[in-house]
Length: 176
Length: 448
Ligand code: FES
Ligand SMILES: [Fe+2]
Image (tube, rainbow over all chains, first blue to last red; front, side):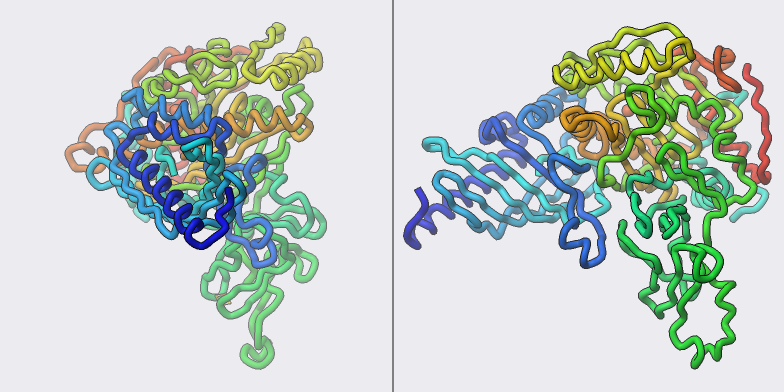
């Protein structure tokens, strides 16, 4: 039901904000199975590659396109679940011993509300520290589409726009 | 650079060892730039990145940026991306369209072709040429440096800064047959592959040699990938990454420094192995392509391969995911890896989409397989730097003295499946280059 007054809108935003922050908590706590339960079976996560282009081209081609081009990530539930299984093996060396990750998800806004479907925008700072001194900071914006199913919201689409063009981290073994 | 230093002595092929300094030392790294990256054939990119006249993209040769430009006549040139006036990068775009590159510092401009001033990269515009330079500047001396050697091979673009480098096909030797396997269409017709749009570029805190040395044929590093093998992400279904493949051999080219994991030339017909069984429609297409390849090449020796390296830093996967990976040196302990995905231009969308998505879950920083390689390469580099660590060389002794001439290939050896022969071949060639003797660098390595 689209919110038809300011109070409803505020409550909906608070609900979505709670959802996104709770999701961040699950991921940082490495509760990956619980996190999978938040995903819609048809979920798609896409993280395009940013490029350095002249003004004319930039408008059209700043980032590679999901479903067609090379991406950092472009996948659905099956692959996300495989990644969780890989983390659970205990021999995924890139994450064993486990990295410590804290993400700050902020600036959450509702961009579109249509029935039980919400498009939310946010910004994130993801800090990863690993072993002694390995530190990565990934900063970017996200556009998340959530779908309400009864009492719960599930993630249907996630688009991750990273600032970096040449990725400064050696891998992307975290969920963004 | 430490002229005359005996860098070649860091590699002891008799003992099967390589000194760790080769992987960590700044003076050696600097020498590599002069002696290897300024002389070898280097991979720059793919013609599908510059299909039209006046298209360009920027790439790297060693630590330096180069512009790869197609001129109005369709010729491809590699120009050093550093202004001859004060060194500014004349082009800071990943790709685009231009006939002239204008430096953003003082405005010198350089052509992408030879029409205006004789040579590609010529200096064609100098602000205040008459007033400030009094028309005395010898513009013809100040064009961008251009790689004197450039080769196009089945869509791939290669260049060398050394005029005396051998022809590209001589440089490859019979390794070209394995490169063909990756670049030819799946039905065996020559060429026909292109790159998926976009290049993954990322930094790893490791020495650049870890990547080509691994890709040249290290079947020993299975434990690196235990986690992904336990999960099973291959398009054939089931566990492991290569369930559907026949056993492979390490095949190397000792005088050249190239090598691969693959099969010797054979005329026997092989059945299709259902490598894409998870995607029936895609699998059918691959079966038909495989059968077409068998028919097209019937009676001729065919090869197949999964992964290999062309010295010094270009590696490729010929089966799936079909990719090109180049390890660009940044510093002794930092490497920038560039990754392309190859597909058949003529394949239906579903086939290419299955390949692209397998690439994304397997390769590169988001790849479930390669993320573990990079953990190993980076901490191997870190832990090799100390004075005590550097007292012990790396051990490359597996299978020493057991290489045999590879039947059906010129100047090649095979050494079974599990061996470090190919890594020895890589480092042997590294030592040849590091002696600094000019081309032709004929340093024959007897095929034992
Ligand atoms: S540095 Fe390019 S014009 Fe001066
Ligand atoms: Fe590997």
